[in-house]
Image 1 (spheres, rainbow, N blue to C red):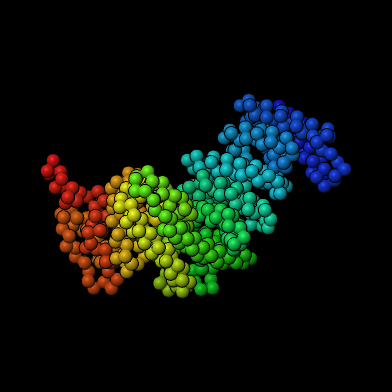
Image 2 (image 1 turned 60 degrees about the vertical axis):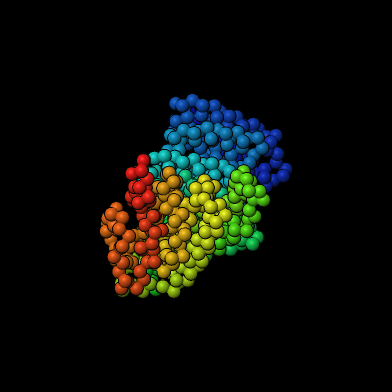
Length: 500
């Protein structure tokens, strides 16, 4: 099959249309080139219907030109080009071709950087969905990184409406990728350039929040994807005062890596602070939401559903903060004792995180008093609860002095673990590290504690000499949570079984 004539028609049509946009004396819609371009698009669309033809490399090589036509917003023609492109990319073989040969599409994206962002969003999302379905994403990682890095660079450099349009394009691109895929991709083709560009673009929008509230929210969502996928790149900070971490990239040779790492660190601290502020704002909105005027179940459920909707941003903010807590804990553990860690900046960030943690605990205590049912809370807001448990689980594993204030929340977690099904299993996974941390502060091993619970002995050998011993150990709340996590029946459960 010879498709060179299609390439000529596409190339000539694009060239003529581009000229007509700058020269009003040229009418593209009435020209021969317009008709020929439409014919080429329709022929490709027909070819795409036939499996054997649609997988032909000669046709797949036309994808970049077809992308340009779709992105140009040519009346009538671009819509049909987008449909043809969608039909071609519906086949995995076409996506494989793009990821194995990304350069032509990168040039097309660059050529139509001012074009229709919907086309770019569709292509990137389709490639990401393909990557997420693979057992091993490493094979096509270089091509995926090449395409996404180009879009991320456009996002970083744009200073017009395109920047705001690219926020959702990149968020939809990263959404299908999970942390395992991200790690596999980064092991083959470093994603640092993507993180740098996206981080820079997001923080620029976040700084303009007063003027672009809607886009600031979208930027926070996009940034949360970075934290979820590549926390080590997002929060990369200096190992020693004045010395940046070493990367294997060639850019380190001219010092740009050190400068970029420093920029990412500053941007991550700004994003973290904003996440804490926005998270508290979401909590405040949920707290002041008026209760149901009537006490019947339908009215209460409607009012509480409205409360939950007001807190839609909280899981995003809590996810960013949780990601930082996980990363900073591991990072600090990896530092040698002689390392000069900048404790001041970390403690300043911890202070803001603590404010969000305390606000979260207070909200759940208040909400529990309103509903008087942990089960109803979980039914109404599983996403908010999961994000809060993950965040507080990591936070409570950092400082035993705050454990006492969290005892009511610990009781709620025990109920959710028991009655929450799959969500309960996830909550158990999130809370187990902070239980181990509490035991460690008192010198009690996990196995010793489990044995105590199984023998229903509440007299744990708390190490009173531990300066920061957890106020949890020895409490009914911790015992109940641990019984739920380790699936150990309580005294009450055993008595119930015996009676039956």
